[in-house]
Image (cartoon, rainbow, N blue to C red):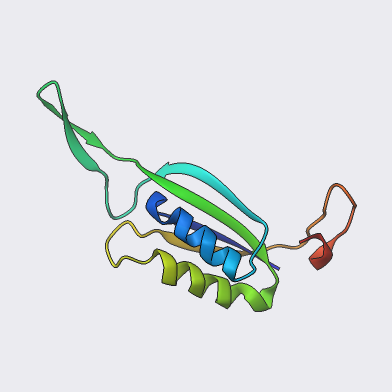
Amino acid sequence: MKKIEAIIRPTKLEELKEALKEGQINGITISQVMGCGQQLGWSEYYRGNEVLIHFLPKVEIKIVVEDYKVNEVVKLIIDVTRTGEAGDGKIFISDISEVIRIRTGETGKEAL
């Protein structure tokens, strides 16, 4: 099993949720996060002074899938969220050694 963590633009969240639903990908966790990468934030003016805002609002999505679904899910995320501009986000993939459903005690793929 693999955990896919994607950090994306907030404006792409609804479109991605719909695409995951259509692709029958269930069991996602969504968090609002702040971060910066190559965009390096932006500047605003407050009371006549320039203020640099280094952290931008982003959305983090976590999905745990069986190994054979990883490429499908990653392709879906990229296809839906890519704009071609800095700030599109990143995808991280890591191994999951075990999954346990608390309510039933099921483990492995049955717990997904």
